[in-house]
Length: 269
Ligand SMILES: Nc1ncnc2c1ncn2[C@@H]1O[C@H](COP(=O)(O)OP(=O)(O)OP(=O)(O)O)[C@@H](O)[C@H]1O
Ligand SMILES: [Mg+2]
Image 1: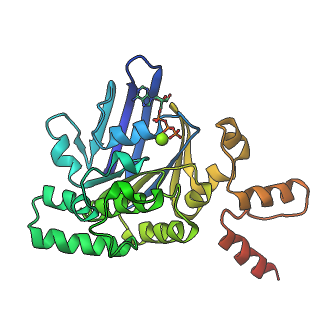
Image 2: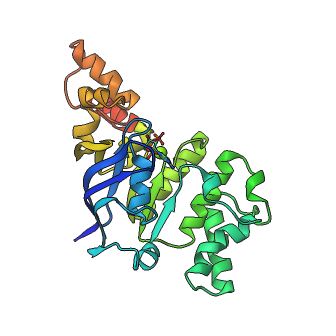
Image 3: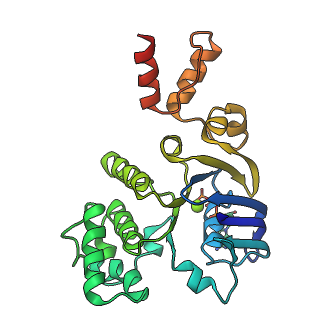
């Protein structure tokens, strides 16, 4: 059974052209799926549909085998944490503490348990001590971390992450990637960060209102033609080795991450 399945899901915003056109997608439990596509491809719209925040004009969404409807969206959403692209859309309480506690309290946890969850989540994102700060006075990267803490505090079974690494500093980005991999929950992430996709994703969907392609990380990330047709490019390291290959200076499997490239060099040394 899929953790998440979309069948023929379409969506149009009022007064705007089609944002999503008959999207079929399935995500297995524990899998990390990346959705990549150019600006305006419908990635954020798709995540909101998966979270039951937008209703598809046609088609269906199933969460853990159950069709998502207006009536059960609240209940099914309980196990889903969605990180919005813009943290200002996510943070709305007067203090960081209240913002991060909002989800756990809403899940029915008592104030003591919620307090523990807040402390734990803020520690994970490196913001212990920020409890009484005003969310809207934080830097963009700090806001993003608070928003991430807010969803971690709910201990969701599935994370829907919209541009999770955007605007984080290199250490914050590396820590977040490590954290997501450690959580071992089902993850769907929309991103332009090809290096993060190379490091984290199991499978990739290329979206441009329609699903242009779906496949394993390697199949998609080493297909320069496909990526180029969607206005995307390979991770920098893969592009470099692909250039060497085209010039006859490299044979073998194109590495997708710096770590893979280093491991390959060691093997050849
Ligand atoms: N609230 C809205 N009202 C009208 N049109 C919208 C609205 N939100 C998004 N759109 C349009 O829907 C399409 C898909 O937008 P969406 O934000 O899902 O794309 P995206 O792939 O997330 O883009 P980006 O890479 O820039 O984040 C775009 O053409 C956008 O202009
Ligand atoms: Mg978006």
